[in-house]
Image 1: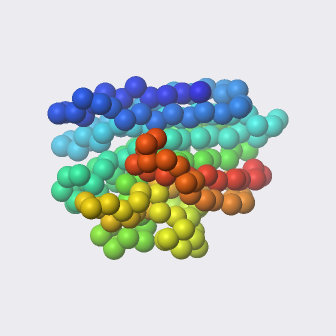
Image 2: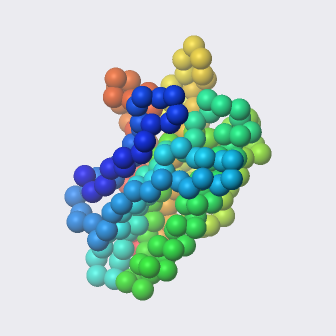
Length: 197
């Protein structure tokens, strides 16, 4: 394990949710950060980040994140996720400046986004549009909804595709949902294979 966050629990909760990055590679650097409050918006959790040198003058920058859930008022939840994504894009620009002088950069951003670009109730949300506008591609592009359900439906919520991988400077070979046990998580794991440039 290269980095695991230590985010505090939200108000009124006893347990916190963490994000980690593991690899067989030796990281150049790795850390986690909390999202920063922005006025009345206080995004929960944050992200983990790791930078790897995969070949001479070729780097891979990886983010793992978990954005605000849909357990509040939907428009506020969307604004909080949009704020988190603005902070992530700003961080990526800073990392581009810091690591870009070391070589060619490839990027992977994955995690629980708690939103989907093709779900009608999130049609006005700009969270995923922001990262796509920054040149990132969506690993689920062209894959039918039923083949990318990461949160199976239950009595309270319909099935959802909330877990995503976005990438830049790489070629997607294949992406799929793993049939993981509900005892390990209420979300299914997402797998992807990439070729780096």
